[in-house]
Image (tube, rainbow, N blue to C red; front, side, top):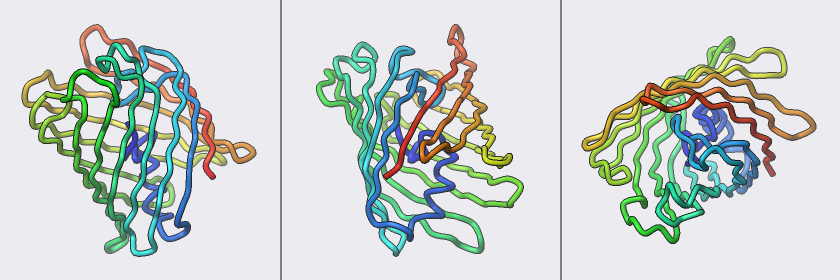
Length: 219
């Protein structure tokens, strides 16, 4: 699920806030060894092909769509996730501010609650030696789990041509079990292709830690 993912990782939101005024239309495509969202695989540990399109206005308003294949058993008959989002990004006193609304959709699912709305606020600051992102998201009925909140903290540290990322997230639900997830990753660019290797784990009982390798391209 894309957004803060509207980053494949939350750290991408730092880049999004900084580049809003530079282009009107853009696209992206990615191939990942495992689609992991908030610590949980969406493809049962299998590969995913992902991509989307974005429109950014100089005023700071943006909108876009993003999609990925998902495991149809997990999403009650749906093999595709399609996200649509709209938001506004600006800077206030040197701090990036991003507010947005996102709709998760799963065409063909037999469980209507899988189609979920979420509203987010993100704050970011680049200190040079490190960039920090903090975000909070709210859903009135997150995949049927009632009122839900998701808090995220991301620290990106540039090391030469690469970036090291540390992410800690907390998911709290009205009618489901709360949990935490965290990840460590390294990313960079080679010949115009983005490369990222990410380790993810959670405190969910019986859940496995995961590694994912992703190759992406923006255009």
